[in-house]
Image (cartoon, rainbow, N blue to C red; front, side, top):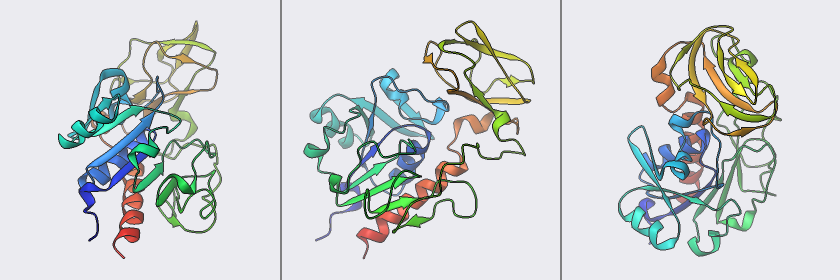
Length: 269
């Protein structure tokens, strides 16, 4: 007898924005044993929609779905029994052996393989470039915005990283805030705040970070984070709708749907 969906164990490497979109999509499709692996001090730009915030705050809710930070297997199973998504500090994936996942998803979007293997689970899925289906994983999901976004790749790799942020209302690189220097990021701004071109958002060390366009702060890293020059630290949404700051993006939702398709196509044969 096939294992019910709500009993299949899914491990997601990463708990940032895209990984969270995947987790939300799977949870709503009745996959209820989801474990997300993170670093001890994760840095997320779109913190309002990233389950990695549970590492900092013990718990995090995104679109009504709750995730909690767990430290060991007993806490993990208690959280699953309570209907929660779980997040655990385990960047090396040491718990994979004990959890025996049915599905392993590399969702850190590092643009290269940092250790994911075909042997991590019966079904291994990787998001974006840096992986080759059939070598590093079973299925690669295309993450590049455009015609092929969310396409399942069973042979070969996703499109190469362009280095250009996705277009929103005609803006690409202009909407991204990057650290102008190494240092500690400080700010008095909050996600959802309106900003205007040239407005000071915060400081990277002693160097000002300024907005290049009008809009709202859709994302901003945690104040006090140590940053390096060029690091993405914020995101200005030119559409000006603060409500978008608190919901999963269309890209993350599409990628989540692609992962769901890949799992169902494998286990519903």
